Length: 299
Length: 273
Image 1: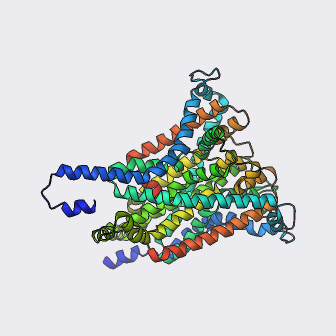
Image 2: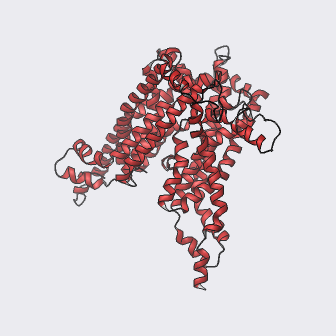
Image 3: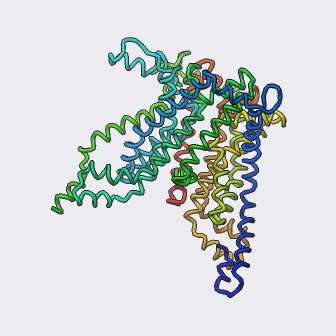
């Protein structure tokens, strides 16, 4: 672990001495992480903790569960249903679009893969705001998509593609797709091509080799991407706020409205705490299966 | 038998045409919104149209001549720059500290550093707004930089940690056995080896702070609006080609950044994955 211990490890000294020294050193290394932890503590834990406390304070200033009881009202139930619907559709869509792309990237030569990767990385680097705006423009009534659909004769007159459920879903799918492709690609890249050759030489058809060998080996990446896209969808604010046109009520927007329109901090914080609990519960369930910190590090 | 099996594994290009076609469509879906903005921004019209009927630079002129927009751009650059200067050393120190600790101790610490990526932005936004209101930090550069650092830390930590993973710790031990102090060994041996990871982390920090908009909606307004904050308001209130011009500038900037990363990554393959 450390130079001192490595140098003295052949000695006969008391092992517990080194264990103690190692522990001491570990704590001094923890000090290096302290400034960062303080920043996260003060700017994340304290504000969110404050909201947590706030969510249990009723109108009369006493401790109460009224903020949570109110979440059973139909308006919130509709929000929850819409949020899970959109998150589900976006996640499914990103699997259907992301898997073939990641598969292709993993099969190409490194050079070709690097070139194709630009199509994934450039959107990933472009600000979410810019991309959302682009979809607003593309999907509007006289936008490119509508005029194409009309000129191709698929529709007779422009259909509303934005300021509704469809627009929100398309925009979110576009923003979140790279979060599916990148972990999928990094797990597919590690799959040894010899396994597939072995499967073929044992008589498997290419289809069979794919489903019985390749697909199971790509599952960790698929799993990571799915969870990442799903939890990011649950708490997404920007794209639904701009592409939903006020008609799509997602969880995060309900939080924002309660603060900015009604100044109802109790309701907003209860909604926020519940959103956080759901997000963490999903991650914790996943953590049982594999390490969540790898999920973020594996990008 | 063997030759038959070997040729069966050779998937021919034409058998994969459907895959290439499908992926070409998906790539189009991914890339078109990022680049289509650029031609639209040269429109002479008051409305967004594609293709524009007449070309002009008027929206760029409007952007660069507007004191409000320039103030917003300058503010965002300052916030992102300060964030990078502070978050990069803090994040690098944390990544190094964690890399030297036994794994069972680091797992909860690493998770805490990832919290800013996990906790939904809107929740952080209203919480920070609530706390900043009591501290008088709303609408200040300090407040924006503090939030920027918090958001940037996970990016720096993840990037630098992956650089440290491929760094051979024995090099540092060798330096120390030759009399270097821990700090000397770190600065003269370790840092040069992981410098492209640190640079990538710094770039991520800059982009994270520059692009932040959800929290800025709450803690920045009026004269102290960041560029994304002003863009958001503009998009919501009127869809004119001015934001297309701003967006084009940002798209070109992200392409340049991407190229810089690609070039910087080359000498140290694998380390800055």
